[in-house]
Length: 151
Image (cartoon, helix red, strand yellow):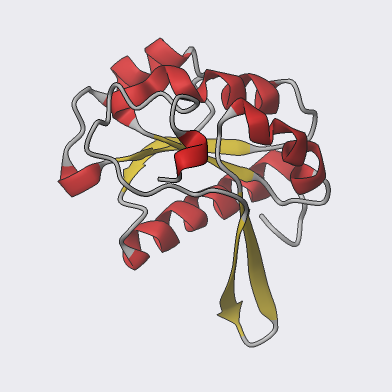
């Protein structure tokens, strides 16, 4: 954590947190020889919301990575994507050390997610879990768009 975030970011639910994304992340995953998935990530704090309109332009979809200890923090992201036409999104509950303190359907209800929006658990620090999450997003986006080459 940086001193700049002291007093700005609410760490009440995560007092042991010592690191954070402080700007934008970028990654690339090669799905096969001719197909790459480019990944852009931004923190969810409201001071980064100005990036979202640019990041979603041309995007296949979005993963809202939610900390189950701080579910209320993801309400703005969910609202943003629910109000953005043609922006499929899924919710991935980042379960640290495999712990999910709530049932998935209870989380769906708390977040008021439509039944068609996928919600799953993951550990963003684990490559296999992250790849699975991206696979769920791609499959959901393919069905969402109905593109024959993608379905």
